[in-house]
View (cartoon, rainbow, N blue to C red):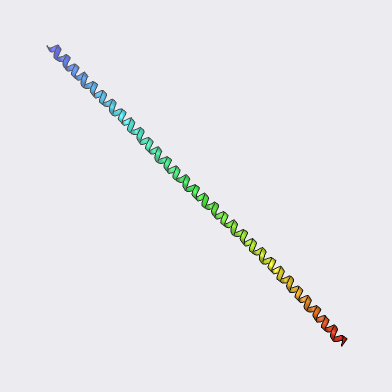
Length: 117
């Protein structure tokens, strides 16, 4: 009888121990799964941060390219305006010289006319 009781107690303890081991295994697997999920989430967060930074840098680079293009266009336009002004100035100077030469010829003709009279 005592043996049966001892056997039952041993079986009960073995059953409890087996359940405790199974419970511990479940808790361990759950803890490992939780850590894996946390690591995945952290990795996802890092990827999203990296992607946001990459997009921000791409936008900044595009802004810089746009600014450089605006600057080049403004410089080109300024050069065109300066060239036009130089051409206009040369044209005005040429016209002025022509008028001065014509005025000198007219003056010389008048002087010649006056000398002939």
